[in-house]
Amino acid sequence: MKLTDVDVLRRLLGDNDFTFRKSLGQNFLIDDTVCPRMADAACAPDTGVLEIGPGVGVLTVELAARARRVVALELDTRLQPILARTLADCPNASVVFGDAMKLDLRALLADAFADCARVTVCANLPYYITSPLLLRLLEERLPVASITVLVQREAAERLAAPVGTRAAGAVSVAVEYYSAPSLLFPVSRTAFLPQPKVDSAVLHLAVREKPPVELKDEAHFFALVKAGFAQRRKTLCNALSGALGLEKAQVAAALDALGLPPTARIEQLSLAELAALDDRLSAPPA
Ligand code: SAM
Image (tube, rainbow, N blue to C red):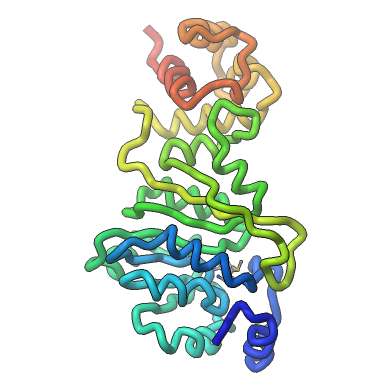
């Protein structure tokens, strides 16, 4: 069954009285070039793939053709009869119904992929959970080698923006800390049914075994990053003193020790500079 053929897809959905739910980010792929390219990026021999949001299984079948095993998490149980049909010829693919934000992913990965050489994540993500889900996958330090996701283009650009550039945000710092991001290819809005208002892009995150900077206290570092970006137009002296209860002079002295001016804004600092600043500001007073 050619699931990217609009007539085939409409008939399949119609046969099952399925109507799209915007609240679940249901925009299904109808471009037959996207899924094979995503699956190629996500699969090496003996890979176990966790897919989030299979929809009618258009990406799932491409993953199943390349991976050792695919487990797809889907929130919408109305898709159950459809997936039973579209995945009938994929014995190495199974679907778990539940919320990807709530399921115990560590236990699920350990259970499902014990005999796989590596585990990756691949998904056309529902737009409303893009950042929280990616942060969850990274912050929980799940045993995942890479994450290949189709997301709104603006989100992809923000997530992959190098820290120290204007395009970066707090989420880019987390992405760069836990992974090496790259934008793989753009995907036009015309590749989806129903058609969304914006274009998309495929983002690849190669998860790091070890972060590129050493932190004394990750929670303190990310609180500082969040505080800085929450008021990104302000100088770090003003943004951090207010939010973290520090003296402006203390922030200025820490910046000065790193060779940075007291007027520096958070978007001007690299990951290494942010880590060094946090190191100085989290040190117990002498
Ligand atoms: N993979 C399909 C494709 O490319 O055509 C569907 C992608 S569609 C953008 C997102 C899918 O995620 C939908 O099937 C939706 O029901 C599902 N979904 C939404 N929220 C979810 C959640 N919290 N957990 C798991 N799946 C979810």
